[in-house]
Amino acid sequence: MESPSKAPHSGDSPWTGLLITASILSCWIQPTSAQSDSFSVVPKPPYGTVGSSITLDIQGSSEQAPSYTWYGRTVGPSNQIVFYHVATGYHTTADNRKKIFSNSSLLISNLTLSDTDNYLVQFLNLRSILMVTARGHLAMYETASKPNINANNANIIENGTLVFTCSTEHEGMNILWFFNDKSLLLNERKYLSENNQTLTIKNVRRETLGPINVKSGIQSVPVEVTPSP
Image (cartoon, rainbow, N blue to C red; front, side, top):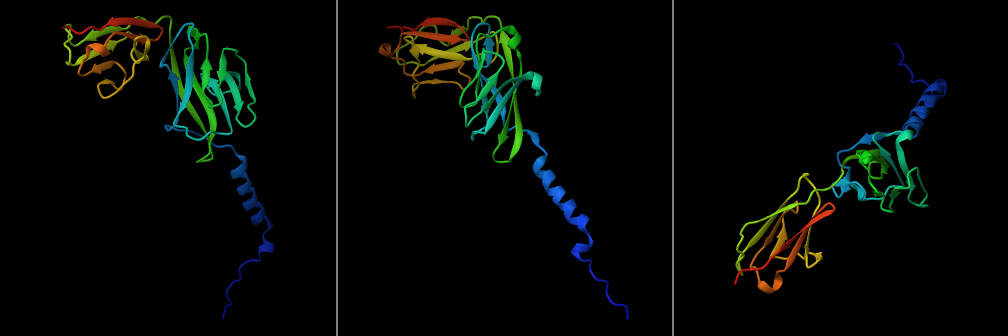
């Protein structure tokens, strides 16, 4: 009767252990990066104008990474804008107009038309232990045109409803509303649409109305609001 074959002793195959060890080490040594739709670079305000400043925020990141590296156009040493190490605060930058904040946002001051570009930031996602790249686009305009304001009713009646609609030449421009030169306080009577283009005032009262200013980019338009008797 033929005896069953014996499994080889581990000492008979030294290469097996070496190959397994090499495989495990390669998993730790090789850098891994990923493009993720969960992260993006968002300009605030959405558009830049010549001579103004803009902040590029990282959207979707809730945990601070050990370090951040910002790039212009594409990822590469020649396109690096700034490197920032969070724990030490150490950072390097080749352009004095560009500064990184402690929350990893990038500030670009004294904007020029040539700042129009794609902007990318690389950092370690602590949840997936992957190096991710967030990207976004900055559009520049030489000047921002004045916004146009339309009201739903030329004759404002007290206790009625007033709706202002603001339109801009460039879609997506940041729109801000002011009342008596102060940021408009919103409540259940005064509220804005999701894109800030429409302001609705319900139960219009004489004592709560006055000059309203609408600002888009660096241009503003005053609107005098007075209810009819």
